[in-house]
Image (cartoon, rainbow over all chains, first blue to last red; front, top):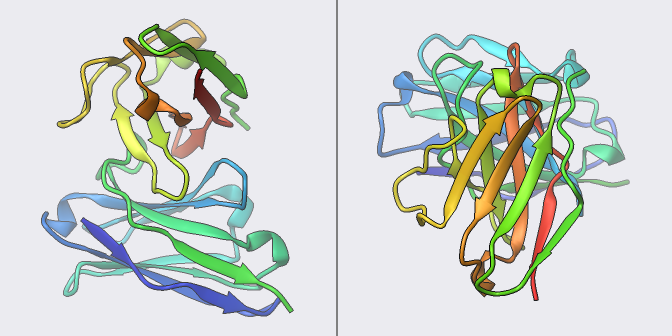
Length: 119
Length: 106
């Protein structure tokens, strides 16, 4: 399973860091993808990080504002989003992904973390 | 950028078969996945690699993918299947989701 950190409220221009702790499988055998869902909207893929070597692949839309990291000692992945805007308000999900980062589905999802950006 | 197109809504009567389509340029050349999301819950993987079901997913859910269209078929639709459904595929190293289809069981 994957368990995420709690809800966050941030002001425009601030940064947020969401964590995703994995258990029940070998963390380094898979990747973690991050997906967000704005209120009433569909799913948007944000990027992927390898659990093995930390290699990342980000959605072009967020290039320069997003950083994904992981800590293999605690089997935890992190998403940091900077220069927050009101349209970053969304539920952020992490999900277990294929080790290649370019195929497969997302089979285990976290419970979601609500990030609210408001002045 | 690559796009996947789904109908916004599909309606079905209980016990009937529901089909939800997902269209994209040469989608059949890639593997498609399908997810179910109920209100207030995280998405659940229903179908991967076009036709495979993860453990625990009922047999009434099936998938196909050919040409430019992937299809999720729900046979013997039940009231509990009322949810949003999303297709997903990979375009190079970018995962792309369809816009989602709300299935209503009338």
